Length: 125
Image (cartoon, rainbow, N blue to C red; front, side, top):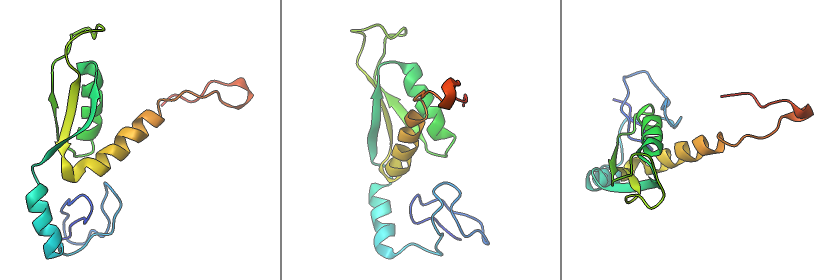
């Protein structure tokens, strides 16, 4: 069964590129990578922390839509008032960190509103 060497997603026979990270698929992983994957498979790492649950859930949904499972840790003031509870940490498996970071950074890069040429409003996304 073909597998992506970057995100470790398995595919059906006949597929040659990963639809998530666009890497060339391989028939099997080298033994050293399989052993490393087994060791790191369930190690959780923090991608980012947020002041409110709604911010964290927004990124959690983005990652979920890209087949990256996450968990939230921490407490938040329901209205996000300053001085509220501790920040919400978004955790995920270490093996997904690079892909998740790229998605996270791309999401926030798209949030920047820049004026379009000739004073027109930018296209909404």
